[in-house]
Length: 393
Image (cartoon, rainbow, N blue to C red; front, side, top):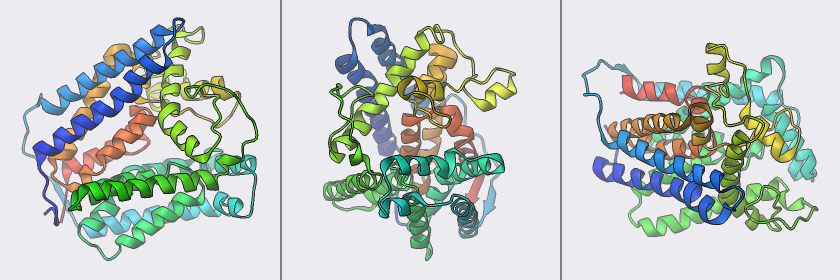
């Protein structure tokens, strides 16, 4: 049962293949080569462009070629509405634990006129700077809000479940409570795709919904007092030290420039004296380093510190191919891309629009973070196993 929406597998696959290729080519191939390269660092821009092209080849290979024959399997059949209620209950319990133990909420501090510095401290303390047993809160909420709860919300709208708006409002309220500017995209992205499938006039829908998402992003930047920065620097747009002068410029800079700069500087750091271009073989992952007895290297934190100075909690949001390359080289880039292509293909093959709407969320996550963390910390491996072995009544 697919509710009211039918899925054209061939057309859907073509759309996601084009989407993956276009987005990653523009950001991590074209921009580095034509806007960031210079005679001293051509190697960095060239390497970033090269691994991006290799990734697209790997993604498309796995996306379109079936290396293993499909086999019949037994499914665990469960009631979808009961599953949704349990996921929602778990989500609410974790959120309440986080809020109760957080002290002052960043959103309330913003409304009473707190400074940007105070808001930054409150956001850090909300989840990242937890101590003792409270560290687990971050893992639990990320495990459920990265895949399972967005899936539950989309499924509720697909079948017009009576609780669908309760699920959505709960997610939105938590999203704005700690002023994490991009957090609401975890539900905005799959919802955007779902209603795009449903819309009759898709051009009008794109204009209205796209404008609404941009307006919400600007609102989140405004509430977080991004426009309260008093320092003025005359740095290029594609520089991590560039300071936007308006909220609108800040939104564009964060979306367009920061991901590319971070990926570029990640490779620069890897090839520098800090690591001398020596592959880390999984040491950047806490899971893999513990399994294989490696010394844990928090590469994203080292990169953040090289950009902004010392910080105990700050991590750079790193493109997933950087993780693949610094750990396993070009082979890692190709294999990681094969995995992503396989996951996206299997999501589409379910013909379940609620599952398919998670694909752009996966791409967005990989745009900003590594594959290993997304699979194990963000719950994508559990979600993948669910769609492979579970059927909902």
